[in-house]
Amino acid sequence: MRHLMSPLDFSTEEMNQLLDLANDIEKNPDKYAHACDGKKIATLFYEPSTRTRLSFEAAMMNLGGKALGFSSASSSSASKGESVSDTIRVISCFADICAMRHPKEGAPLVASLSSTIPVINAGDGGHQHPTQTLTDLLTIRSLKGHLDNITIGLCGDLKFGRTVHSLIEALVRYEGVKFVLISPEELRIPDYIRDDVLKASGHEFEEVIRLEDALPKLDLLYMTRVQRERFFNEDDYVRMKDFYILDKEKMKLAGPDMLVLHPLPRVNEISTEVDADPRAVYFKQVQYGVYVRMALILTLLEVDVC
View 1 (tube, rainbow, N blue to C red):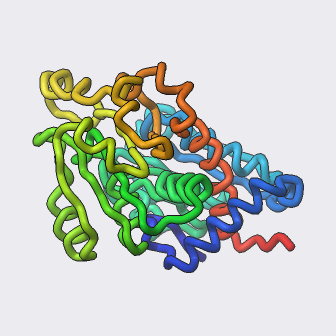
View 2: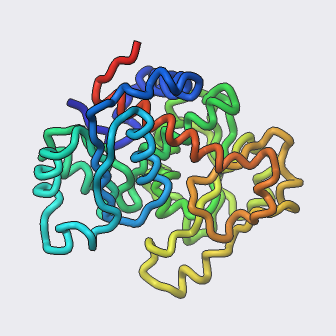
């Protein structure tokens, strides 16, 4: 039995196999329509979510299985004081696989230690979001054709953004990837990512404040929202929340083939006028998220579809 806590839980070869499987699911959905008949996924979401929770449920349903779970801690026995370990022991009696989101870093890992079914980390605090990373990698590879030799700009909340941390850790395994880290001083990338991941890997990176300075050199722009739920001080959030706004004028600075990704939800950081730009692929990204989660469920349940 295997769990997924971090993108690094898969080797590069296994990652590529997973992405290949996701691409095959995209092209041949009928082939996989009954692959998980009789199987159930439990979605245990202690934090609010739209895309991640529903995409896991849609993924299992597309495979012929069913979904159960809860969408907030207040609607679970956590509100009565039940531990994560006890919850997963109970859920293991009901489901075949589990996706867990939790505000505390490491909570899905704690659950996996007591689980008798595969556990997928669906986001733990500001730490990791591995299935979003798989979604990002599938989107980039499908639309660009490769994951190496790209220049990617990561913009916004780089301090608390778990999607950014996970994506950097995954992309440093590919050659020729250059990173442009775009953030205000207060939301710069954490030291452990800068020193232990970027510097340690030897990848080229630079840190800038102005989005306009970065846009002309990028193959990909990964926008993120400033997350109110990660701030201890409302005044700090209000001061930071509109620091970056990508609009049509700024898009004129970017190359004709630069793609704009966003893990969503967005607030003000991408103007809705950008949605019509063919370089904006964040809603395509959502669809790729279903395919990659279908592939992940099949992989962790060891379901082989011939």
